[in-house]
Length: 117
Ligand code: HEC
Image (cartoon, rainbow, N blue to C red):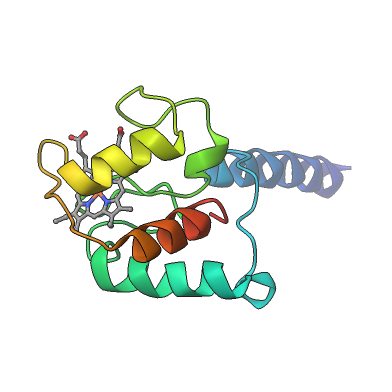
């Protein structure tokens, strides 16, 4: 009886930990399913954003983790995660985040990739 109770408690706490750990965010699209545009966007992210942002975690690096960015109600600043607002942040920067200059193609590819997160 004793060990059964212990097992039950372990199962419950593992369950709770699992939820706290991933905060029930929708999963990112696996790289094996990326379109060519999303893959090009991932390369732009790697070159221009990855040193400050984790793409598949909400843990902060120099800036906030960007997992599920476009699927959330609001970005860390409270602004809605629309392509317009994200473009604004990328091209003009925001507080400690520097502005990044990108061609229109790079920007569109990057936005497509951000939607997979
Ligand atoms: C030098 C580090 C750095 C780089 C490079 C960088 N960021 Fe950021 N980013 C930050 C910081 C710091 C913040 C938090 C800004 C603030 O105080 O609101 C941030 C915030 C953000 C936000 C949240 C904005 C909001 O409204 O809450 C998004 C989205 C974002 N960055 C995307 C990107 C993308 C995409 C790139 C690549 C083009 C990029 N960042 C490059 C540091 C960086």
